[in-house]
Amino acid sequence: EDGILGEASFALASPMPAIISEYAHGGGFWRLLPTELGGNEGDEIIPSWVIDCLLTRRLPVAREAMKASFYLIPSPGMLPLSQGKLSAPRILRIHKVVTYVSQKLCQDEEREGVPGVERVVDILCNNQVLQPQYSLATVRQYIWKKSDDLELIYRWRERLP
Image (cartoon, rainbow, N blue to C red; front, side):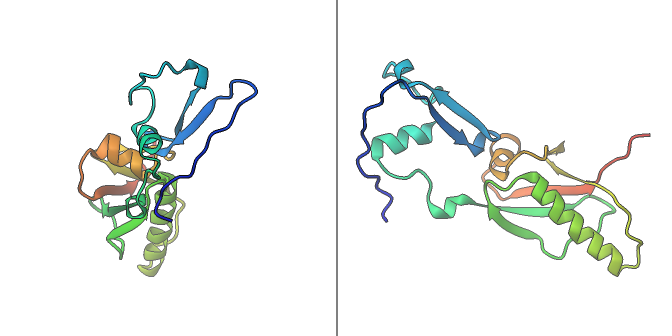
């Protein structure tokens, strides 16, 4: 209940790899056999949150840190969405944001009397088009690089000639 982990020691019949998935690094994973550890590995090899968890025997993430706040800002010429600031789990993928924005824009255009046309939305951060597999945590750490709420710009995808 207070985040303290219980004792966890057991014998392995053969070397078993430790595989840790880390959303903050674009959904990649870390894999290492316990026999490959020398005892002096730092956070350049083992993610720092794993080290903290093992040393303090506490779960690494506070509940409130699991959410990310962000603004959806229209590019010039786009309809603004009715809701500006949003909050979602940090593991939310950009393809879900694209789906949300597309649905809202289509609803708003139908209300404005614009016929529904199948178009695709791009989401940008710091003038960079975001890949659909990126999570909000990945965007914050590697593209946004600020402690402020994320600012995600949406626009219609440019068509190739």
